[in-house]
Image 1 (cartoon, rainbow, N blue to C red):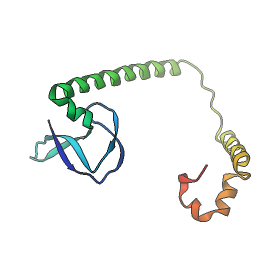
Image 2 (tube, rainbow, N blue to C red):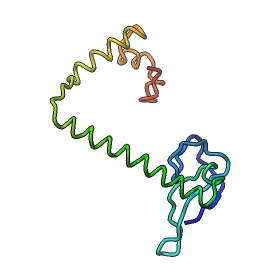
Image 3 (tube, helix red, strand yellow):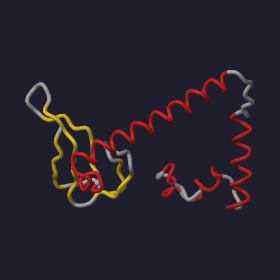
Image 4 (cartoon, one colour):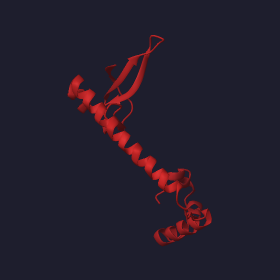
Length: 132
């Protein structure tokens, strides 16, 4: 594996492929990659500055720590799945959820979402980016 640095056109928070931590992508971005069978590069993902600063030995330690955290979370998730499978789950109907959403919208905005969208057709085109 090697880490290469390239100009970046992806801004915002991204996850480090080596330690799992979230970090802000800047104007340049480091990538963990490996040579693939076709002579090209296979990318594992972005690399944070903390991993780069840690050096080779530090990266190996950070990868191992992240793997341990992921494994612990997977164990917790499997246990939770077993617990959920063993019990009855009460789920509200879609109609009941819509009634609650309408109540919320009326309380907050004085109208239902459908009424708000009808009065604001330009903003409604944004879909899920509505202000409620």
